[in-house]
Image 1 (tube, rainbow, N blue to C red):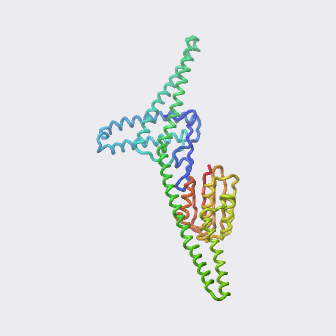
Image 2 (cartoon, rainbow, N blue to C red):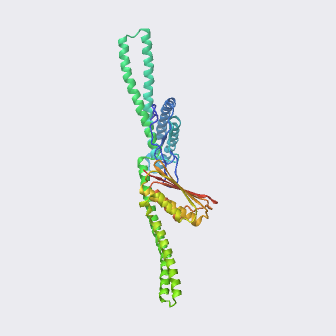
Image 3 (cartoon, rainbow, N blue to C red):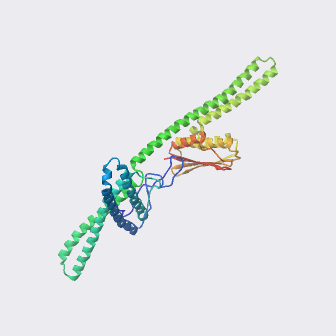
Length: 412
């Protein structure tokens, strides 16, 4: 498996949107690799070096296999023998990885570690294709020497033009087949490196299934927590105030003093207005109706009106957003602003909403004391809500502040 002489095979760049809430750089945590194009001489040298490393791999498999063969046949000693065989294979595989990175510009996941079986399978494939590539390169060199001899014979006049033309046609066909074979082996080398030096499609699929299962469980937990909070707000807040309102009205009805009754009714009227305001606040926390009719910008304006702190909003979105993205962005802003007002001792909050290509970025910053609990129910629920849309939520809250919460939501 030699490098592509015509250019490194285009691997799919890794974007790394960590589902764990911490974005990861390209080529560091994905199944795919990134490619940095290198010069043709560099790739040619890497191809020739690959023939030598394939020979080293063949020697390792033959020698180590012959020495460890009896131990591999016995069930009791097989695990230890396989570990020894795989240890040498890992060193050769690391050399192959370095060759691909240096001469072909490939960038692979840094923290991915393949199993012993996968390493041995890679070395076996690598030896076969590498040695075959060495044969092809040798034939190409042999053909070049013959072409030089034919050209020298034609100059000295020892070859006729008809014979020279026949040799040239035959050599051209063989050269074409040789180059095509070399190109195919180079592409195979690139594909093999992509398959063995990072997670396979099956591993990526299993990882994605695990992420979706975890995300689904987190969303269910967040919904249950939200329901409990709503029930608590209704029971401890609105219900208690309604009870107080009923007591005031009852005292006014039973009273014999008109002035006292008037004062109680006035107090009951003020209490009813407070109940309505609190009920409206609970309804906004459940789902803001402004999102349906007016959009995200107006809904965030409602957050600013209800915020007890000075809240500055910079809204830089000029295109319509998907409804789930708008909803998630609203709740991120609403929860973070509420936390800043209640817990951070902040004097001001700023919110920036910007659309950068297919990604909506929501940034909330306050000048409070910091030290936000990233494992708390509020931020955990927000992280689950954002992760359900394949987004990322980052929290930076050092002691002493400021606290910055950034949510990135894909809109495609």
